[in-house]
Amino acid sequence: MSIRKEENPEILNDYDETIAFLGHWGCFQKTVFFLLCASTIPNGTGVLSIIFVADIPAHHCRIPEVNLTQDWLNVVIPTKVVNGKQEQSSCSRYRLDVVTNLSAQGFVPGTDVNLTELQQEGCVDGWSYSRDVYQSTIVSQFDLVCTDQWKQPFSSTVYFLGVLCGSFFAGQLSDRFGRKPVFFITMACQTIFTFAQVFSPSWTVFSILLFLSGLGQIGNYVSAFVLGSEILTGKVRVLYSSLGVCLCFALGYIILPLFAYLLRDWKSLLLAISLPGVLYIPLWWFVPESPRWLVSQGRVEEAEAIVRSAAKKNNTKAPKDIFQNFVANKENTRSKEEEGYNVLDLFRTSSIRNTTLILLVVWFTLLTGYYGLSLNSTKLSGNPYISAFISAAVEVPAYISAWLALAYFPRRYAASSAVLLGAVSLFAIQLVPQNLPELSIALEMLGKFGFTTSSSLIFAYTTEIYPTVIRSTATGTCATISRVGSCIAPFVFHLGVFFKYLPYILLGSLAVVSAIATLFLPETFGKPLPETFEQMGKRERMTCPCVTQRETEEPVVFLESQL
Image 1 (cartoon, one colour):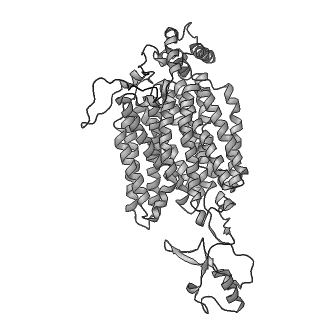
Image 2 (cartoon, one colour; image 1 turned 135 degrees about the vertical axis):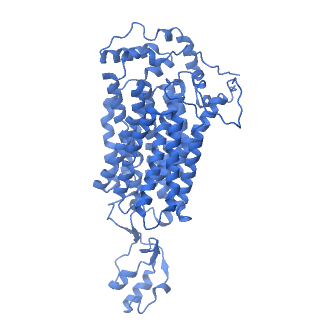
Image 3 (spheres, one colour; image 1 turned 90 degrees about the vertical axis):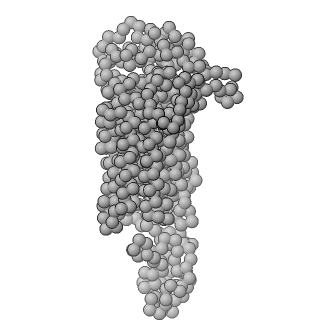
């Protein structure tokens, strides 16, 4: 039997105090800040490119070249009333052999022939797609309509399944092998597999490559987020985690509809998204490994070398022994490194377990709402490019609000209030009169503002809650569960066929759950990042009066067979 013991808090002194001589905003910090922020721009363009790549253009059954009069050509596609408007059927036509015979005999549709009595058939000759909005999408390329229409939302789900797996494995690999190598490997995966999608001969091949690009997408973002959060300190870290990476993600998202509008073809769009990834190769020589992580692994000499290099760039003098207290406990730290940490450590005591479970619920609800509203953005108005731009632009004030909240307000109250604002906005949509669609759009965007602000806060909040030795694993695990929500998000607004406002009621209810759950998390406002599980356990939290906890908690004992 193997017992996981709580590490000695002396092993890792306060890291921020140890490297205080570097300052907060020297040349070294500026380089790391801007390069890591820039690395998240492709995440913004890539993660939501599916809204254009897999959008459904207007379509109807293709009519081959047959001898029909103009009158019959005008009516060969049946019409139906949808939301009070006449629309052509997308998946049926009148039987072509019957229509051809009637046309040859000189009958006039609607006068000599009652069209409602004619037999209909499916689109046996394929479909004709409108090119008014798109030159092509994967829907028109692979005919993902009618009986195959389920493949359209499922394409988004496949991508988010890749993101889900990437979240889980990238976090653990980052804690085990380092932030930097995982950051660059996942960035390469994102670039290579997005580029390869252009050459997909079928929807199946496209979906496989889409899944693989999703693996890299989130791994790159999580690694960059954690790497910057550990290298930067003080208010600069808050600025980075709440505003820097988020605004660059939003910038990528804002650029996306511009690219889509100019290119109009799904293959050209994917090329425009993937090729800039090559420009990030030189970052390897400018972005260092996290010294904080190196110290937690007992690799003190490497950490000192990076910090001394940083001191040289900042024109400051480093002390002779930077991590002298760490060296004394080096062997102790190495023994822990050999034992390693994994996802089970997130459930080792009741306090840590409760925190983890609450965060899993919060991440799931927030990301379901965020991606549900984002994927629905092209349906807000008649112009999908303008709709997507508005949806992207809303994220800028949301991230600025998150930055201000992180700088001046307690985490749990700020995050809870933001998502509660989103819930109220979504619930209010059903009260809007039918003749005020602009107000409905405004409320939906206000709802997205709330979800985006709270998501940004929770992302930064999570990195502040967990200790260095398992921070990436914790962030990756939470992101994994949240991606379950993003996997079902493409289908949320399909519930509108049962009741128009059902998607908004569902997302609003999830937001209320998230707002309440957030209040029971430990507060981290104004406190340094924890280095040990013991430091994490000392954080104050609001307790539920109906639940009693023991004063002293013992770590959970795992059998070797369980590990």
